[in-house]
Amino acid sequence: MDETTQATNGYLDVEGGRLYYEVAGKGHPLVLIHAGIADSSMWDDQFDLFARQYRVIRYDTRGFGKTETEDVAFSNRQDLYDLLKRLGADKTYVIGVSRGGQIAIDFTLELPEMVDALIPVDAGVSGFDFEAHPPTDEEMRLIQAMMEAEEKRDFERMADLDVQLWVDGPGHAAGRADQRVRERVRQMCLNNYTNHAVEGQPRQLEPPAAGRLSEIHAPTLVIVGDLDTSDTQIMADQLAQDIPGAKKAVIHGTAHLPSMEKPEEFNKIVLDFLQALP
Image (cartoon, rainbow, N blue to C red):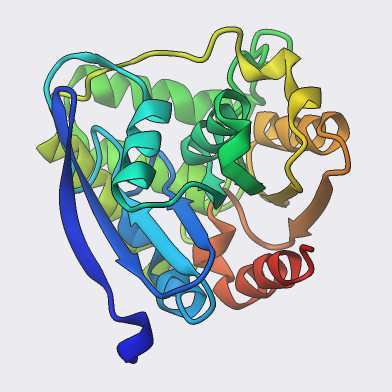
């Protein structure tokens, strides 16, 4: 990282917590929101590169990484707003993966004037009807095994199952994904399970995003891995269909974390999209 992209980090005091964040680069702000099986270090393959062109902000949400929280009700959208205000960013591009994608979508709906572009990646959609789209048999097997491990507080087993479901992808052999990616995600999961007994109580967006996607008018690029779970595929289609003018990119041979599995392809897709914006 050269002088123009030198990173700084810090903590922001928020109601009932402290958010850890890192910032690098100059130019238009670009926020990276991590997945629920990770922390902000999942963006290591993007952070320095994107900082050559943008002012890149990554942070740990409550219950993850180096961020701390008390057992209080809070809004992930307010946390992001407070962070952006602290950093003097009135407008931003937002990229979020999985749970981070849901936060990005909800933030865009709540504060549309602050979002100049939205990139949900293998994203959740608040208010999605999971009952109408039940998991496959293999997905259910892994989910049930995860619930059993959680009851026993077997964090090692939970992390292994997270990797199998989300990194290898359901229906694929354990170890399909690159071993370095699998181990990085496993360690992030294990750290989160071990270090964050208190996660707080996130306030949901009301009404939720599922029935409101047509309200989003920021340029939007939906990214999804073709080996991801069945409900994630459905949500990606819903986002691409219901957000006016949205584009969709499928990264083949990846599951829930294409930015980690195929960073070069992911980075090119994202940068090409952002650079084409007016």
